[in-house]
Image (tube, rainbow, N blue to C red; front, top):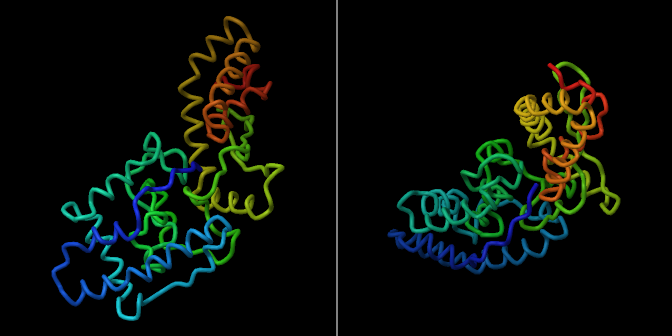
Length: 280
């Protein structure tokens, strides 16, 4: 999971842009009158998110007494996502805002859509609120769908408010079978409380990261087979070990919790693999 910088856009400014071309005077007036409610909702969100209390925000069917959830959701779907929508340039900017266009939820696939942390189907007032929207890959977006949190530990990691990059929580172990493969799992950092670790476990399970990382690591092993076999022939297990150590430290310096880091650490610590376990 990767932390993202906060979007710089103001929620009300974004809302104004999105509703700017509405021609129906009644709808336009009712939406305009939602601004105070939206601002209050944003303040509540920013206050609760760092404390893992977003689950205490109530779901809604009506906003400001006279705007339906469907009408508010369309401010996003019709007036931000649409190719000719007035807010489309904001959509495109946010979708491209993740470093290297990597999804912050799986830390692997390419971003190609936007995701709402609190789903707009249940929390329509946050449909175009910047701090509730972030770039993601379609796979993670579909996995999460409209799932809502009912307790702190069930809330998946928020790219804007949660930092889980500094402490090691992702590990792997070599499965000693032919061909070799890896199993990925989570560990609890010493400085984390139980809720934070449970959230990582739930996030890891919800987005099926063990399966995803195992698949990519299998491809990595296959791609490196020729090189490792050549090292083994020329310098034995020690040459293989040196290569794996360099690869592990290189990956670790970039991202301590990448599947690549976990992969090469596990391979470096596996004497079975280095002594010919890699052979197919």
